[in-house]
Image 1 (cartoon, rainbow, N blue to C red):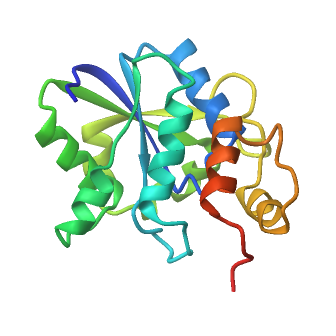
Image 2 (cartoon, rainbow, N blue to C red):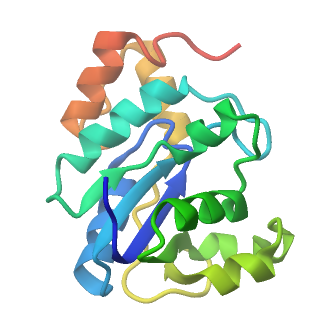
Length: 190
């Protein structure tokens, strides 16, 4: 994969990716002057929350990326860092991507709900120097421009899938099909 120009990095657990993520990606592509958008699934949750296997979340993100044109792709950089025994915080990911794609400029897609937490991020000053922030509004949190991202709960989606109930309208059809076919989230956590 070659990347140049401005690349929006849309990181998250994507456990699973849902319609809110689709809406956010579409909003960035429609409103911001970016050349590419990369879904960047986290390998390990920063606060230790259990996640579906990394490969499963990458596959689901690829299914979401297929809803868009060739500007939207999925990066496995955080899995690559983990396999090398390296951390995968935002600053580490930015450094690795900057090394891999020296012609690219980066922007980080974040919800306005994260703005109050940014000062707690590892090496936030370095992050700010390496990338601009694209802030998407979240209901009940100041910041961002445009309408708020739809408030969709991945926890609720996982619970519905574990019960065998429908998640139609909450996740892309291809994501639900993958979850059902592969048995991801078929059992409640515990």
